[in-house]
Image (cartoon, rainbow, N blue to C red; front, top):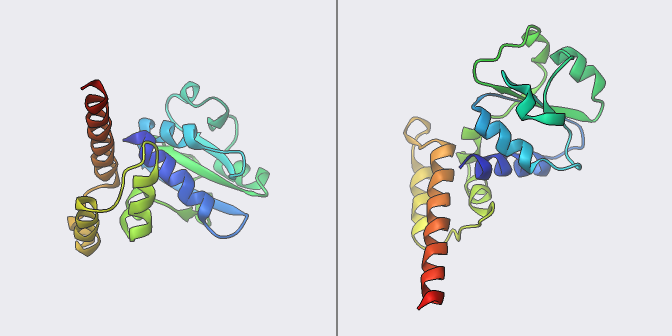
Length: 170
């Protein structure tokens, strides 16, 4: 789930218009932050992850620089991921960063489809189309979380793989 959703968020950022991007994703668990880091590509802005365990994020760990310093050092933009429970001392300096939340992926059909397209990809026809329609027509408070939708796709992909393997074993 966290890998699929992390990859979808990275791809969403890649598709955002403009070369320079200053984006803040906050309040995510470390497994989602790891999913984002695994999917990060060199054609994206600098990624910095603030967590209680920077050793988990290698070159993407936010260490030795404040949010303000990071913003000033990154002319092409930066995506700052703040894990749950972490507070940055200069939080107010991040007010010009655009906020991105995993829930934003379910505000339109494109985000839903982007989650489905992450490896292993899931077809969005048939029953999945009905699920998409139900989520898109639900009010924000009634929608499942993006993590739940990603887990649903992971389960569909695993089931499809099991079915494919059992057909080949017969």
